[in-house]
Image (cartoon, rainbow, N blue to C red):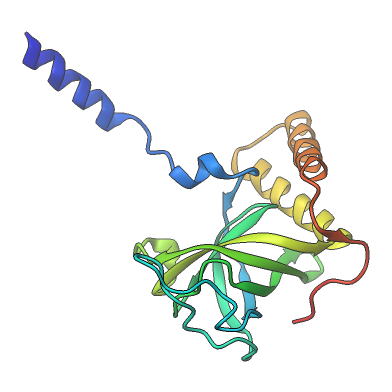
Amino acid sequence: SFRVDEAQREAEAMTEPYEDPMAERRRYPRIDLQLPLRYRVLAKLGDAAPATAGRPAAAVEPGRGPTEQTTRNLGVGGLCVGSDKPLSEGAMLELELALPSDKGEIPIRMAGRVAWCRPSTGSPTAGGSSYEVGVELVSVTEPHLRRLISYVSQSYADRYRLDDESRKAFTDLLQKLMAATARNVSPKKGPAL
């Protein structure tokens, strides 16, 4: 009887949905979105965190032309993007995200900090990149932040088929979260890529 109970518990544990451990540490919801992104490393090699066990040193030379990649997921507090080379945790990036709209793509310029970098899992959203890089957004202009909140909330509402009331509540929640965390939002000038 003990073995049957143990096997049943193991079977139940195996059927529980997988939860992303990073999701628990995030302040803002993320949604899987593949969007064009250009980034450039700003930090000097010596300024970025050095390589330690399990974490690569910056392999991308700062100041070189922008790298073009595709996001894996996006939220108002950060994103995941592919990279052909490892980036150091803490490295500063200049980002330009192309948000689709009915008027074409709208470029959103931001600054971000590398939160983590790991070898790519080879998932379908990996896009052939060797590394996945988690980026925390640290600076964005107020108009760009409003566009980003609007796009993320619209995408989230469409993906999860939220009704109008829930859609508005979700957008309001994102705006309140942003205001409560005292983001580095500048009214006019953002990073130039």
